Image 1 (cartoon, rainbow, N blue to C red):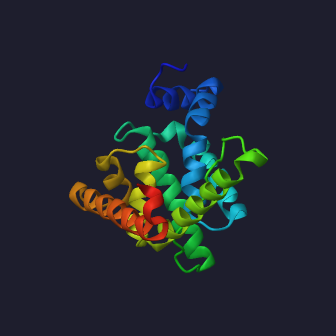
Image 2 (image 1 turned 90 degrees about the vertical axis):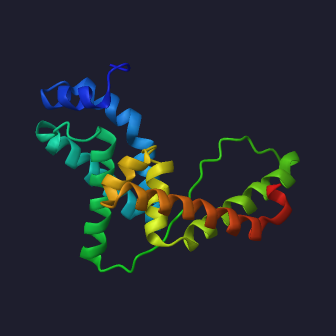
Length: 187
């Protein structure tokens, strides 16, 4: 199962192979969840939408057409669920929430390092929050979804050049913001 493409797995799942779904879910659950969490400030809402996305995958597996990569289809579902929720709740568009997994062991002796990491996390969260929503969306799809520029363009329904431009400006603005907030700590 692990060597099969996502497209082959979703097709197999649509034909009833539950192991195929397990493999797909394992491959993409982290990226989808982080994408949702960083788009929405509320953990509970992100978890609800996460469940809605995977429920939609389950319901739509038989209808999946290989006209796009599975990841493009999956992140389009996720993005549409966010948009639907925002419309439903009439929420003002919110920039981001960053919940970086900190896998590094933190001992009391590493207090200074821990403080630096916390400062970096806070700066990154603020800088992501300062991005224009269209830049943030494209940036997160590329970084969290591991989508190509072409696939990002398909998900957000713009030209490849527009997606590339949004991503480029997101990186430029993040670098400038982080340099401003962290200064020499980035060097």
